[in-house]
Image 1 (cartoon, rainbow, N blue to C red):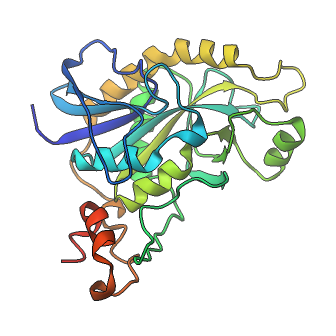
Image 2 (tube, rainbow, N blue to C red; image 1 turned 60 degrees about the vertical axis):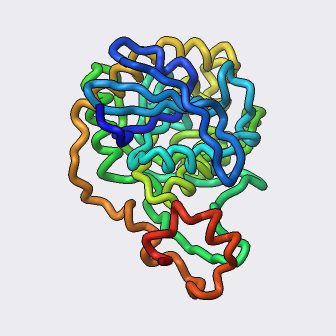
Length: 288
């Protein structure tokens, strides 16, 4: 088995209980930003090394705003991961994105408040480009792998991240629809932005669990509704991940792995030593 992590998966704690995962090992990882949400499960899948991280902790004990997104992304980066797929539950803001469907979004709107959005600051200013917040090349590979399961898969659409943990009011839901949003969730921001700062290819496999609260002929979203749909889709997600690992291209046609090359604005010689040490994993190839 390769020592390098071919693919990292962030999602529910049940994802790694899949047929074909060999030699699973639990790894505790420490980071300058604290502990990740859970121990990371490393194993071999389709002959490749993969990593699984439970975003909300084992047993789903961490609320969306309490997730240590920086520690999660940093931990995966420290294990050598270059591609990260997020398996996420979302509500639909479109009639054609129905519960049970899977969507690979291509845009993101951040409507959260007060989360830790960046690895940088404290003497090191970074302005990273996120015009396309998801890796388009990797997203296409995720779409192909998911479609091969036979599930109904859609490509494209804007995902809005709300603070949570409550669900939306009807007024909010209708407003988000009027803005042109397609999906609503609670965890993709700032995860996607931190992945870009860490120069990781990042894509979302969004599992539609409900129609939020805008749909007049459907019952308002409940936790039970979300869990039932996710349980039905777990096998689909597992098969999609197996397909993805098996067929991942070795070539990179995106610029994700050079995202910081034009983003670091602070002069090298004035970056505080403590800051330099904290983000060394991320900047060492630029600030020697």
